[in-house]
Length: 40
Image (cartoon, rainbow, N blue to C red; front, side):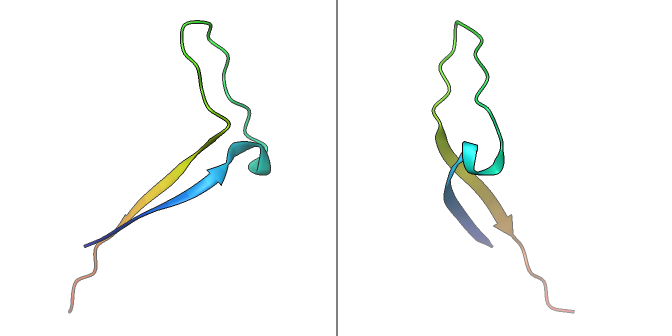
């Protein structure tokens, strides 16, 4: 299993952080993915 996090700035991809009043969303975050390989 291979797990990885890639840091991103959401605005670079046209994603706006939601403003809900009771929660704060940072302009930066992580994209996480997991890769599972099996031999056949």
